[in-house]
Image 1 (spheres, rainbow, N blue to C red):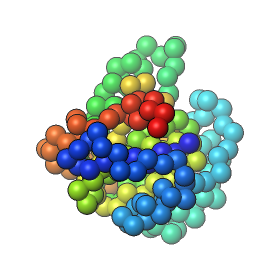
Image 2 (cartoon, rainbow, N blue to C red; image 1 turned 30 degrees about the vertical axis):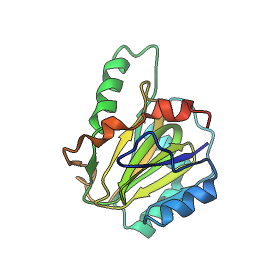
Image 3 (cartoon, rainbow, N blue to C red; image 1 turned 120 degrees about the vertical axis):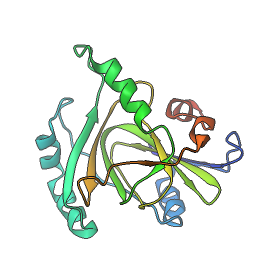
Image 4 (cartoon, rainbow, N blue to C red; image 1 turned 90 degrees about the vertical axis):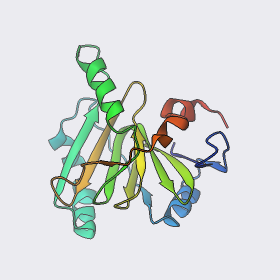
Length: 192
């Protein structure tokens, strides 16, 4: 289930809000200009390829492309596979890529088909940790400082939407703030 935890930027151990209520999450994020919604999930094979995933969500993808002006759509997937000896190195590299605060020149729009990941939005002197899971669609406005944690054992499949081919390129701020906040595994382990 989706989770939102809000913390002051100067006090990472202080929790101002922690909720799994999707309506409250959507309302809180909407106040920031961040769109959150939930789509019905489809049963797909664990190793479904990009074409299979996109075909399963074709109606929703086409509707969002038209609404948001997105020209490019792809599927990012990183799933543990005991037969894949390269997974540990690929997972560590992928996790480390976006753990530092950055922004993008266009909206960052992701729909989680499977697994989970956490977007940390740095807005209004607060950090909004949004744990997204299967069925969650999140649209982070262009220019929003944020970082992303896919956990110590990344396991997710997400449909990504882009306006331009280089829309995913991160502009890193150099601010070390991300190191001070709980990681995805800490957030989901906390029973509060």
